[in-house]
Amino acid sequence: MTISIHPARLEQTAHIVEQFKKRIGVWQRIDSDGRVADVPYDSLSLYERWMHGGAWMSIETGAIHLNHVLLGGGLALTAFDDINRRVVGYLEAYPGVEPAPIGANLHIAHLVSEPGVQSVEDRLITAAAAEAKALKAATITLTRWAEDALSTAAARRGALKTMGCVRRYLVAPRSGQVFYRATEQTSDDPALINGWAMPIGRLSSARQMWEALMPRTFDTIPEIQARKMHRMKFNAAGQDAYVVVQQGLYNPRTADVSCWTPKPLTAQLLASIRDWAHREGYRALALVVGDEDAKLLGTDAEADGYSQETCALELQER
Image 1: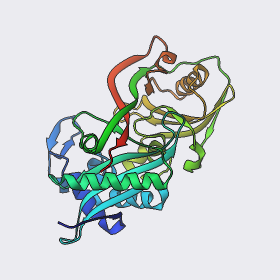
Image 2 (image 1 turned 90 degrees about the horizontal axis):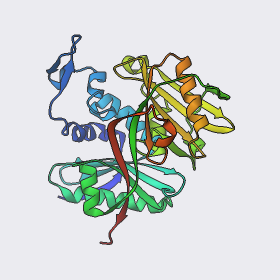
Image 3 (image 1 turned 135 degrees about the horizontal axis):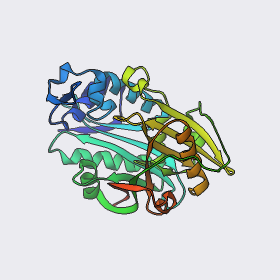
Image 4 (image 1 turned 90 degrees about the vertical axis):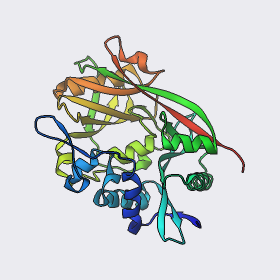
């Protein structure tokens, strides 16, 4: 097998989608009574496919997503079998700049390959490292999951150093005596958060979360458009922040919160978000925060058991 690594092309979407689909063991649908049934892939709607793993679950949404990445949203690389003329691996990453200790980084978000072909994953990671060097990104990061293919492949290629841990807490919105201003945010230019931290909702990197939440890329799918997404700019006690509040998937009175800000998280900013959510009628907020910020949530915050680590990949010379 002769493998070449190059930037992904839109016409490769179908091959990339097939790589992602291979990770799904069973395709299912939830009926109106809440019962789960195993169903053929072809019987699922775009949104039902999306619910199994996002944009890469169908050719239509995969093409939209890849187009966004190739237009500057991130970095997309494919491993191509030159003899059999097919894609055998795909890597997706996002460059960004955050405060220390992460700094200028390239965050690897996705890595898929043909089963059993480890050299493909290694070569894609090596290519990503070269891209990071060209972008002057000092750190390559990824989110570590137990028994995750990306984590396993990265650990085989180098050492993983834990940079931080986040946990999810449920808090109740409440009115508060805090002065703030919240206005609609219409620009999705990622340059707006260059050098900013993401103290709330950092499930991957600050840049990847921005690209996932701020652009209205998939609002043409009715079920996605129907789920409320509030994109706002906050100023609380002189602290600027961009805040996204996304209506809960199964409970419309709950919401997931994401926040980017150039300064450390403060009690005033948290109080303003909780006050705004209370005024909007939400009854519970899900906040993913680092251990160092958890104390700001107060004694009424309830951890739900979810946690994850962000790691830096220290490549070994080969």
